[in-house]
Amino acid sequence: MWYHLSMKNNTLVLASLVSSSISMALSIYIAIKLNTFDVNVTSSSSPITSSPITSSSITSDATKSNTGSSANLFNDMSEVLDRSRDYQTTLISGGYPITGHLVVFEDPLCNYCKLLHKETLRSIENIVKEDGFGLNLVLTRRHYIIFGDRSFNLAKIQACAGLVGGRELYYQAIDILYQDDSSNKSTEDIVKLFSLPENKKKDILDCVQDKNELGPTAALNIYQDTQTANRIRAGGTPHVIVNGIVIGGYASQSEMVKRIKEAGLGQITIEESTPNPPISISSSDILTGVNEYQIEGIHVGAPITYTIAVFSDPKCPYSKMLYKDTIDALRKNKTHNLVIVHRYMSVLGDHSEYILSLLDCVGQHKPDLFVNTLYDIYLSNLDDKTIEDKILYTIGMDNKDACLIKAKEKVAKETNIAQGLGGNGTPFIIFGQKPVNGYIDYNTAIELMK
Image (cartoon, rainbow, N blue to C red; front, side, top):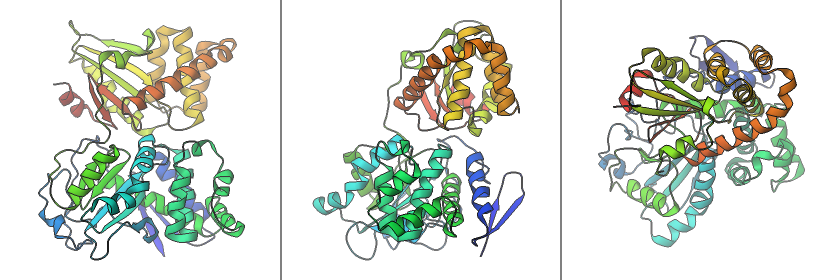
């Protein structure tokens, strides 16, 4: 069997699912890591554009009765379930025909995904049975990798569990991975937590490490799920859909159950998705813990009309696109009296944290060079080693160790601040008091400032 992966540079990658094709897993991994999917990048608030589908995977008339906006309503679930695996779907309650289909796209490092799992998804079977839901409900949980290397590796444990042991192991993997401390454990230690014979644990581990024929298939599954999430314009994680209606991201248990029930029964029209709980953001929140060197003024007069806070990760391709397409254009055009606050959000591993910490060291020792160094990182095509060498030359090797301790603490604090304000990935932007998860282009930014 052959799979065609379409990449942004219009090259075709063909890979055969055979045991000798270990390089396929690497190709798919790189595609996920670099976000080189054949989709257009839009903001999380952009409309979903869905093509007409003629066949329906749900027998419910409730789907047809909904009259939601085109931005949040699919003609049926075929688009949402494209290339999902059988082991990803489980029957929650009731019998047949299935009248409610709940689909969740999630990332194992997403804190809101963990909350949704703990508060609602883990207990939804009991909730449904207790309150007379009115739906014969099934649940499908799919991958959506937005937090980089570590997320991919954790998701691969989940996918491999599904391939080795089907639905039961796939959902057991979710329970294990969504524990608070799982992200700090090694792959070997996580696999040890499965309630399985040792030979089955070895099969999962061999799959994760591409030592058997299942490894490339698991990588492909993750890639296809993430590709589907991007195609339907999932703005972040978790991304929750019921019977073709996008009902939002994380919500409290009572609110999420209410949304699931009403959407499944065709009783509501949802005009806008809500990717995270409503969060009140003030100017003081934007500036909490900020140093003066992180503030860039773009003045064409007074008063200052807008403050934009940008939380970014230097390893995130969408963060780089945001700076190239949007932030740099705002600087050059000078059409607004702006203050841009450059903040840190380390989500793509240790090296991201290291680069951001070095950048903060520039601010500590050479504050006048901070902004230029930041734009060198995001706008240039320099490799990591060249960037590191330039920063170390700027701050001086003698200052490196002392400043890194303080800088790493600051990066960690700013990452926590971003998540507390609703940031579920990078870039995370706050326009005045409007939070936006994900990349936006220049024209969208101008609209948000009106």
